[in-house]
Length: 536
Image (cartoon, rainbow, N blue to C red; front, side, top):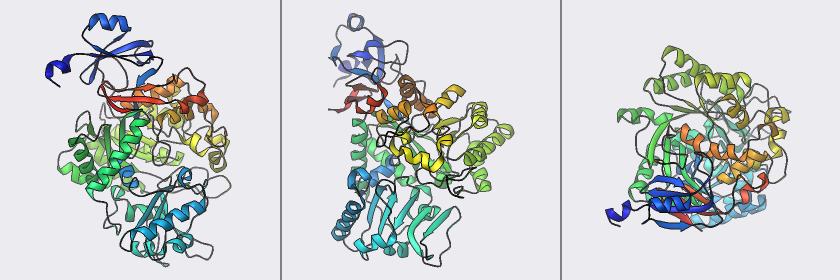
């Protein structure tokens, strides 16, 4: 394509174009990677008579979906191993048969690795069950929440865990009724041996090659484009992940605009090289630093003021308070945003205490920190978040995915204060759209439906119905809200002149169909920078 041809605008027309920049229009004109103009087809044809027109007929165009918290580097690795989700295996028999076949296939020097195992939907899993189908081949099956996993005996030995091992600070080693290790590695007990981005060193798990991981990344990007995603933020990367993403960008394979939160354990090295928040460009950008306060919602390890229903368990704090204060203070003083994982109300209050102290002792106007997940809130928490201008990045699809299990674990009163999109909007707190895949469904349309209906997709159970938002608000959260979470709102999230020409073509209008039908809307095409990156 010549430079002259690149300057010729292209016009895209549909029955409805939701620009989020005023009322819907009929068409947009694109030049290069940016939106040039919006209006009726006749208006744009009159202004740009040489423009080529693509008419999508009765379809609807919306700004590209932007997932503010979705794990691309992790998913690139997961694509190379077993999918042990309930959708893939059905029941425990199916899961164990898949693990058995993999152990027989790979040979003695490799590991069986699988992800997205769900103990509620698929059934309980322990060390003994894995041993029976793997023998001496080490195996690690990661729970869908990604905050605990089940290891077989060979894997436990490789990790250095024995019957007399004490759990690390911020972690647990699961034990059976007789007090023996049952294979569960919880929080830091998993992170420190198997998750490099979260601080693991000298893991016995042989890493995949760069070429293998690049293949996994291509598969993930293709799936996510097919769901309408044009931008993401990977909320936990290590240096080797940045190398992978840079290579993908250089080879033209990273067609998702990607932000990164660097794991706090790697921050010192990045700081030595002068990397700060905002480093990068429109395709690959360093957004900030990731830290952890507590555990997971689906893994039932988040830090709560009141225990999980029917138990005395208040969850886990996985980073001690003084370490957390030092970590956040160091990053804050460098002028870099923090994105700190905090699910339970106790965890969120602890984090806000630290953010509040820094706002008083070292004010940084314009520096906005994030709370990743920010699950269980109340009015005082909302008030403090608004006063500190903190950004919330809650799960969108958890009510749909987990359904009534959330009510069982937390009780209906608390689920009415979880994933509090309604309360965040009403309180004036910036709220972004997030799936946290592989921990939740990656499809943004399913996330929208979950926010709009607050009902389980399998059981139909209502989960905190008072937090429902409108479809228009859900779309705003997954576009403008996410752009604000990465400080990109000046050029991303709208279809308006000067903004990036990132958009999705849908079979139906998500703002006009019943809420329970949003997830079923077909994606016809996904455009990034004015070019089709996926078409049906």
